[in-house]
Length: 222
Image (tube, rainbow, N blue to C red; front, side, top):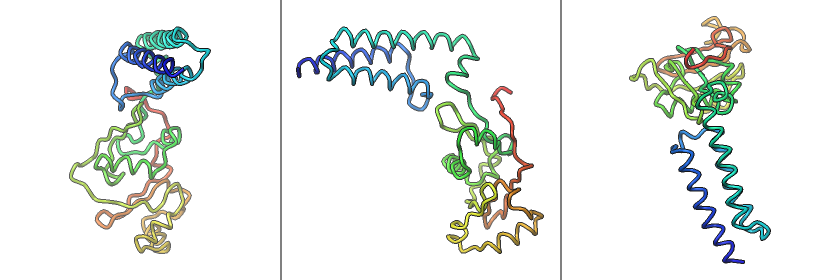
């Protein structure tokens, strides 16, 4: 029993390594959702076979071989057909274009404003007002170009999709009346028209209204 499990594990590991080598080298940062799925299934084939006495070494190798052939065939197809490639592996999403937030792409990718801010900060962009282009790549990481590399001012988000962030106000010793008064002074009287409001002591307010955002899907080459 234990000898069979050990043999399956060794043979399965060799088979999986062979499949990975066959399908090409990719770093973890370049793995797409499609790549992740076929990798998990390969691991599942090995896992299910380990403790099932009815599955012998031949069955295990046959399952790995069939799955590898299917993935190899699909990879060859997507390399030659751009439409199928986009459908299976997706394509980068333009979240910010020329400083304008693309609200449709944010919603399509289930990204909240605070998540967008967090991703921006990871690229040393601490205010969305300084973000010129933000692109969400297929593997989930972002590419970001700032208006200025010198602007490192840390801002706080006060309004998100028309909702005042009361906890943020409280944390920074600010009040709702202070926020409303300042917005009204700048001509913003309706909260439900505001998509995003951030503020910093150095730069003041940065306000994005519904009329300021993009509601269109952009391709990288478009």
